Length: 198
Image (cartoon, rainbow, N blue to C red):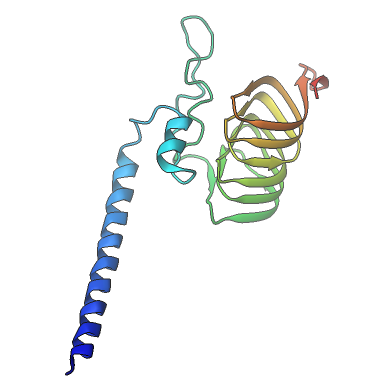
């Protein structure tokens, strides 16, 4: 065999080793992130560390400080969770139509139509692109939304949120950096709405 053949074989062997090493590191990283997400405290930490792909637990974002009855310092900030309960639409998922759930819904991909999860949590990650009307209890948006929102309890717009449409809610949180183009209406106890801002 000539030197060219040996160089080709050596190149193939090296490329195979690089691919196998990459797969090993990927599996090791996945195993590590499943067991250790407690060190990250806010969405901004998660976005800074991982972009839009890795997501944080939502467990503490709904907690209210019992001492004063006020929202805790992390209220709404730990928005997107790798939670085991609820429905999860991944980054590569695209849905055209109506999504109806009786559990929390986490969206990382694309949805066109409507998402209805009455009295439940609906969360849109920074990677999500949604052209749909949303109806839920607590709606937390970190991605792009073009549609109307009806949150019976609370609407939270994270710093990466871009929203266009009419928003109706009892409580409205808008973090610095969020982009809003539309109207915000306060929901009354009887279910009707009152416009507050444009």
